[in-house]
Image (cartoon, rainbow, N blue to C red; front, side):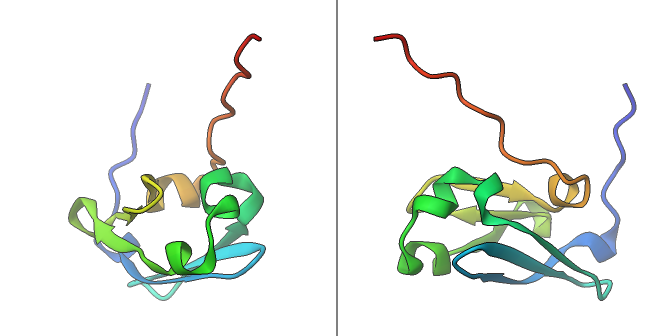
Length: 90
């Protein structure tokens, strides 16, 4: 399996989270916008929790400490939603 190394311009510059989407501005001038529904932890977080993000992983990861969510620019660029968690048996 081939793994693409992130490029310097793919580092996070800014993040904007609305009620239905997340937009990430990269240093190379691109903006990635994806549906918030792809990331259930962010979808169900309150606005204050969504606004409390940090840049991590040498600039290639966005971390939300209050909800323990991490998104990488590589995953966002690949259009990768969060993995589905199997429902627990009753």
